[in-house]
Amino acid sequence: MASSPPNADGKPKITLHWLEVSRSHRILWLFEELQVPYELKTYKRTKEGLAPPELQQVHPLGKSPVVEIEVPGLDKPIVLAESAAIAEYFYDYYGSQFIPNRYRDGKDGQIGGETESWLRYRMLMHYAEGSIMPLMLMSLLVNRVRNSPVPFFIKPITNGVASKIESSFLQRNFKTHYDFLEGQLATVPDGGNFLCGKDLTAADIMLSFPLEAGQSRSGFSKEQYPKIWAYIDRLHEREAYKRSVQKIVELEGDFKTSL
Image (tube, rainbow, N blue to C red; front, side):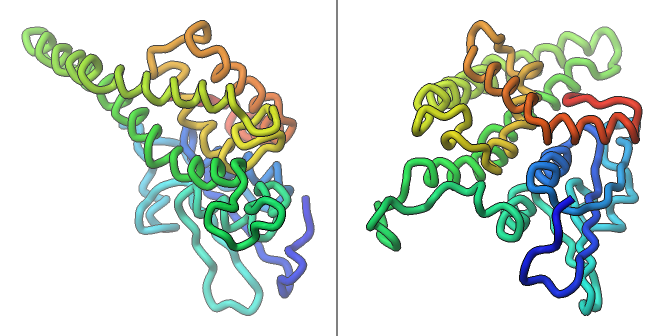
């Protein structure tokens, strides 16, 4: 584990509240990449597939990830929610070397002077949750509608609703986003293996969860989008990712990426 940030007074106690099959695994992986010192508290989903009520005792939204930071001298812990906000917070202290250089040489502070890598990083950090993740959630809900326990004479109606949403909205939008990401991977700056260049960034970690979900929910295959599937494989080959998975296996007995 890494030492505390250079300017910190004392050593903060960092606790990650991790929920199975959730965005929280991205933060566990992030901590392993950055060698953040942390403690891990795990939670199981309810029978309905929801977060357990205990998480509301940590944060009013009752979601995961949530990170608590107890700092000597502070009256109460810092409580962080939202994956991108958590990632950016810890990158500031532990991982600035993983953020692409913002400006090209001689262009510091100038609009239009940004590097392509940095522009991608800034956009993709928000794209993961703002654009592609809502489609994955809608796909999950549509699947639940299709498989809901309703009387047999109602089943054609629920199946029809689910199919209509898929054909009129989900499929075309999934294709737009997968075409976009396949194109991004074909044009990575400096010929790198990650979306923003040669080095892994928090944007790659943010996109891991929706793309893992998409392997079963998008309706696409490895043959249709080979670069995306190969990219997911590269992420899973990271030693820090493997450590994050192993920690969950040791605590929970197994690890899965999709409900």
